[in-house]
Image 1 (cartoon, helix red, strand yellow):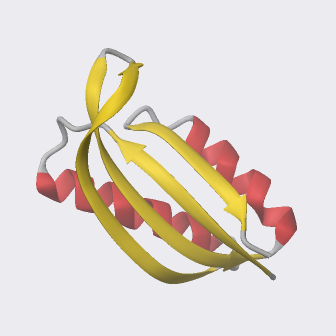
Image 2 (spheres, rainbow, N blue to C red; image 1 turned 120 degrees about the horizontal axis):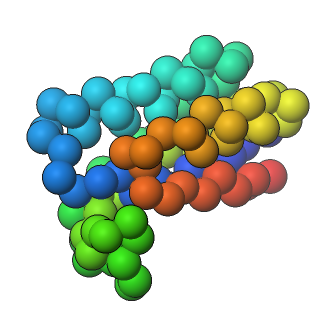
Length: 94
């Protein structure tokens, strides 16, 4: 298991409960692939540096987690097909 962190940007037009469900879905995707969620930070709504899919704002969040290295690609593949996630980046912390 390695330490990773993900920063994600979610569409700003989602309701509070839809946004919470989307964040929970990201976390459950990690735990379903034998991962463990650590620290989670809510950065709130911010203006984007450039327009992404006709959005000028996004809802930012960060989560630290542990995951087997071979499961990272599986998580990324699932995040890539989610249209409510504007951008994400997973980096290794170790």
